Picture 1 (cartoon, rainbow, N blue to C red):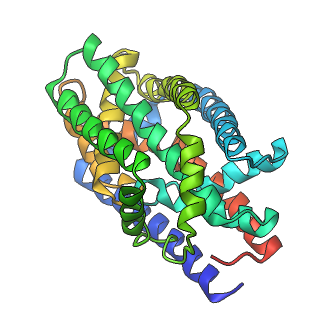
Picture 2: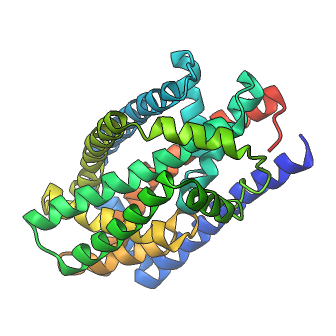
Length: 317
């Protein structure tokens, strides 16, 4: 294993270590005895259905990835496409999920597809994720009004608008990419601007944009079932839209913070937003459980696939 791989793996392990420390600290602050009692009394029968929802979501999102790759004339066997998507999940905890650019390195090493050609797919995936989460928050606000959720969703819409313009103007996109390259795992990029923008033009196909946006919103709605069941696990039935509003609003705040995994911001936002229904210890218990069975479960799953690929093919990034 070369030095670059060691640094990359070490960075991920540091984030995981910080996650353990962080969850330990908020448990102590919120009342570790109360949190312990909450977990002892929770209904563990919901764990398996949550995992099924998460795995199904991974399957659907890998299909969306395949549609985007085919739009730039990259056709992978179903198995390879699925494994590629899984490998990207190893770095989903990076700021804004941009660490998923690791998928471009895998495509380069295994299929000789240039990073410039494939990286727009990863960036578009994150773009559609923000659109879908924002859409779900707006829908939830229409059903159950929340000023906080409305403000956060409006801020997200501004970001979406700015990114939409950047994706259609070459000069703006290059400036945007130069900022992204300051983030971990993107510093080593060798970009052919002409090839990169050609992929962007292909991905900006109007029918494709509408199709992927709708599909991503539907998958995000499906993801919300896992969040709702997270509440049910602790005997809290506040309704699907209220539960997802708390989580997705907090998720947007976490993305905006650019902190790896939104750590601290997401949990803090969730605890504050849900305070009218939940005591702090219960809110912390629920968000820890949801995070462990969704984002952290997929991260560990992705790490297994990504590191296996790194070692097998001796890929450096």
